[in-house]
Length: 475
Image (cartoon, rainbow, N blue to C red):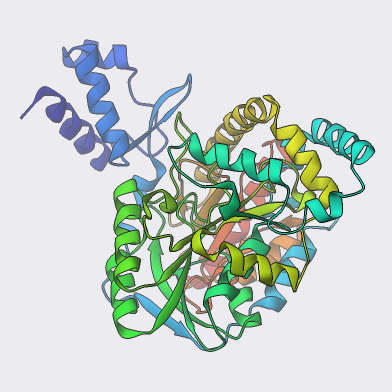
């Protein structure tokens, strides 16, 4: 066994035996060199292996910590759990409406929000670009920005794909009124009412709403907070049902936060190609990665043009501008025609404003700052949750995005917790929002993008108190 393997196994053993607990800071590289009598490169290699396997996480200028997810490594889906759940009629609209409305309550601690802290947006810079675009907008702009959308903006998006080694022609890109329109148009382009569509379990609630609206049938395939969608279960679903499309989030999935490995993305594409199934890839969080490299979308592995890659600027720039796009492959023209029959086009002035703003270096500078802040806040929120929540509650941490997925004891209801928390002016997103089944009723999602001031810590302490009271009643 190589020296670095010996150190890897030693640290694993220490974590398993709770010498190092979740959240503990490990010895620094230099300290570990001193302890182990190994070289700096050997120690670094061992730590990198441990990080790649999910045992530890690194934080810039802070060091290495025991990863949150390892504490819950035994919470894999039991073999008795249903891997596939079929739903003829999806209806969670009332709950979603109530949760979203609650976020508008004055002075609420909004852990239930789907958007990042609006203070993180470069609002002044974008507004300047909007005013400049409005003042110089040509009279032909309404026609120039009809589907597929503003040419300059599509060119900029195409170049951003190229920076990741992907060849996406500007004519393949359709600008839409937000990512949700891109996703809905993609779904309409490849399905008919009554068709089966695969979604993750749990999944982004917008996918369930879209399936309901279009009279489509949901085929939910289980996903794990660390590994993402179960591809073996997906293959069984493709074998047993005539599936027309898969609506999946491959990077920083909402609500779990997981990101598929490149190997898994490649296998996913191969599997869907084998069964001639379209992939509708919801990829709105990929810019919010932690570390040095943006994760590739599954589309990067698609050679058949069967992937419609959908994203937007709503999570990184300004939510209210509602500008998204789909890199639609061979479905670009059908999607343009569908858009003309529905919303006609995305806002011309805002397309022009974003093209102007994105042509500068301001966007990359903003993204670097935003990612750094989100990483700090997510880790801090997780630490506070881990400090106050009962030991029977699991908090799943992931590298990227700004969501934390919390698992209560299975006898508890996050809907009950949601209503109790609202009375304390605290909003969370109960697990029932993210599934057509009852399977995640004991879970909820936390938005970690807001600064953890005294009010936020007090709210987490109150949540912990409410949870502990419910556990005591159920004992």
